[in-house]
Length: 278
Image 1: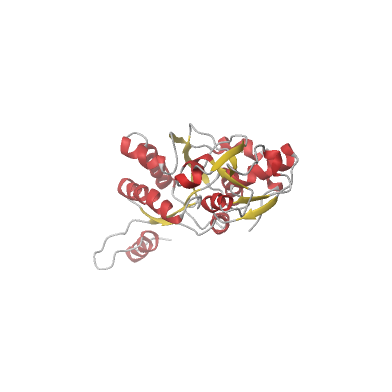
Image 2: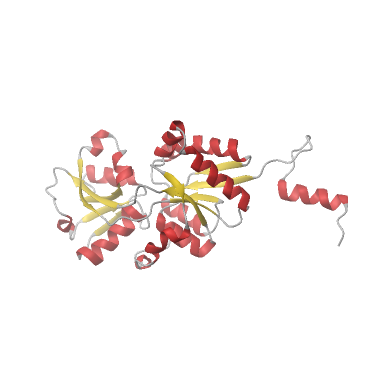
């Protein structure tokens, strides 16, 4: 069927949006969600300058999405709500399988591992001493902080614990400090960024195996050219001291291209036995 001028104009409005009164197309707007490892104010402070950078370099607009808890983030991710998302590695494995998310960038220097911390004055010096005790976690599927530790407790260490889920890494550490839990699962990046009075009151008694870290990934509905521009803009941050400082807040030490095959090792761990559907 031939296109009339009216149909062509209508299509432009439907695809690109229209700026009322000025007769020009608005740039498309995309959502970018960040897994809530940290306090939401910290996520906003870290990611807002990155969002500004993406907008200035790609020509698109971005809305930063900061969910209140990891389970809420998981629902949005697995439902394909977000155009772009920064997620933990096992979140990516599930989101790729269910929605076809494609990884764009990741830290190519540092690996992700979980840690288990206790109060320095607790008398707990070895992880097997946690058998039968209460351990605080941010959420069941926080990979480094909960999923991998729980799997290793069961399969590698043969210990049973009482699980306490407290919504964030910060809360998990605080629960140990306040005596509400005997130990907490976390990751080195969130532990190192705790206030001195918290960090200095805790000690690491266990570290898990290490895996490919968090990717920033794009939903397949995002146009390929936009996904490529976001990838290029993020990698460009790693070429300047100012950009490096922004990436350090995520934290990403050395940024590079992420591939789906980077996460194959996780697919073979059988972690679905410990994954909790929310």
